[in-house]
Amino acid sequence: MTDITPEPKSNLKRFLPLIIIAAALGVFFALGGPKYISLDALRDNQAFLQAFVAENYILALVGFIALYAVLVAISVPGAGFLSIFSGFLFGVKAGVPAVVIGATIGATVIFLVARSALGAGLAAKAGPFMRKFEQGLQENELSYLFILRLVPIFPFFIVNIVPALFDVKVRNYVLTTFFGIIPGSLVYVSVGNGIGDALAAGSDVALSGLMFRPAVILPIIGLILLSMIPVAYKKFSKKKI
Image 1: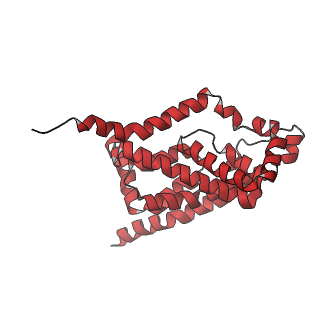
Image 2: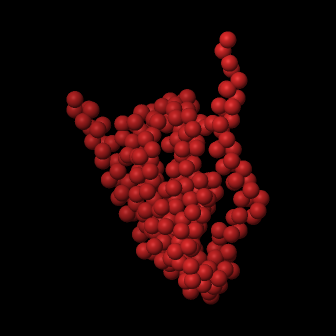
Image 3: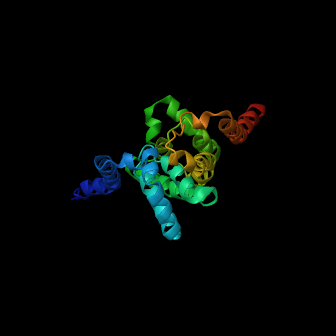
């Protein structure tokens, strides 16, 4: 006689990490977390944060990376504000690596959790568009994933989860996340590195449309076009055959 009792336990084990992440996100909002990752919070705690970093640089840097990873892992919207914090506290040279490392760790965690809970290949059941996208992803995985990271119209936490619905290699996901977020991270960290005087003077810092300013978006478009070369080459080669 077959024992069917392990099935509920298996489902619980499968969804438990996702439930924990959802609960952590709920606690974050319940405790007023968003107000602590805002420009107002940075302005109000400017002196304290600078003093803490000056006295505990390594601890502050490691702690920042860990915090960034956790916020990305629980899919907090607007966690990118921490990129500005990073530039303000650590400068560009240390701030960009801190953001990229923390974000990559957090993104990989939520990717693995989502894939375990939802199952790779689930999106193929959603319709012909998703099946077509999955086919293109399978043929040009690195290019597609890199483009998803570079295009600034897609929210970061959405791009973290969508690849989990497909049979994406973890190695490729990590690589494209790490390198794909460098341009955007550099922009926001650079802004943070230069807003100290503005915050001290109580001036507003304009962030709206930052990623779509010509000096920012044009190089990103160039990278997107470069990423599409392998895709275009494969399609062109197939037509010739």
